Structure formats: C-alpha cells, structure tokens
Image 1 (cartoon, rainbow, N blue to C red):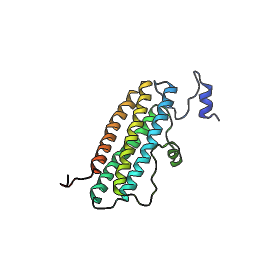
Image 2: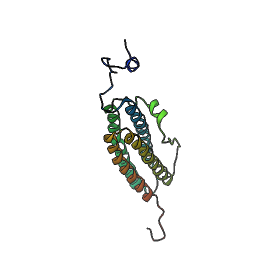
Image 3: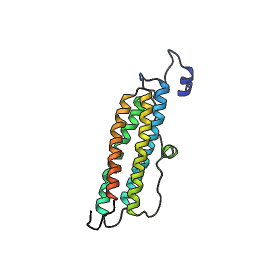
Image 4: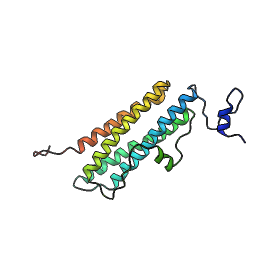
Length: 182
C-alpha cells in the first residue's frame, strides 16, 4: 500500500497524489510553507482562545461583569477564526493540526496555569498575547505574499484588524482611573 510520502517521492505525471492533497495552482513548496505558517497561527489561536476563556471563567473583583463579558466576547471572536484557518490550510492542499499535542508543540502563546491571577494582570497578559498574535499573523502574511496566496493573505488582514481591536479594548479596560474617575 502506497503512503502519501511514497507518492510525494515518486512525483511525475500519472502518479496518484496524496489522498488529502487538494489541487492548487500554488506550488507545492509554497503551500507547505503557507501551511506551516498557518498551522502556527492556528495553534496560537487555540492557545489564546483557551487562555481567554480561562481568564473569563476565573475573573473576579469589582469590574467582574464588564471584564467577564468582554473576555467572553473576545473568546467568541477568536474561536470564529479556527475553522476558517484550518479549512484554508486544507484548500491549499496541506494537512492541518490533528491534536492537542500538535497544538502544544506549535503554539507561541504561552499558557497560564496559575491558580489565581489578578484581573488587571489577566487583561495585560491577554493584551500582550494579542499583540504577539498580530505580529505572528504579519509574518504569516509575508509567507503568503511570497507565494502569491492572495486569499489567505486577505483573511489574515481581517484577523489582524480584529486582533488589534482586542488589544485596544484590553488596553483601555485596564487603564487606571484618575481622581475624577476617568
């Protein structure tokens, strides 16, 4: 029985392609590099989603309701990216993440397993994580540009905007008020 690796090694016309190798006009090396970049983004998105929900579930303090709702809204927005990223990777003919272990090996957003985190520290950490995600997406966009993958680049541009908005909201929510309450 031939494997996908056997088929990749064989190359040439008339050879059976890998079962999950969706046809694309993009070059195979390009799609592999795009998939590597986007699988990294996907792992980061899963990590940021779970951290945002973790902080949502463990929020406390006088601004509980506002922060709890903010983080739930942000988590929903982050999670909405997951399927679009994975399906885009498949559309260019490459495999995507397969397990929690795969996510853990690829993620660049660090977990926070602390038993208690101050609300302000939660917001500040998520702000930095969103900034990191935006930077990681800009790097992935460069890979897409290099290989003329306009569709993935276009999606990334929208996600960068959403990520920058989350960063802004977290920054503003965590600002210290002055003596007038502003």
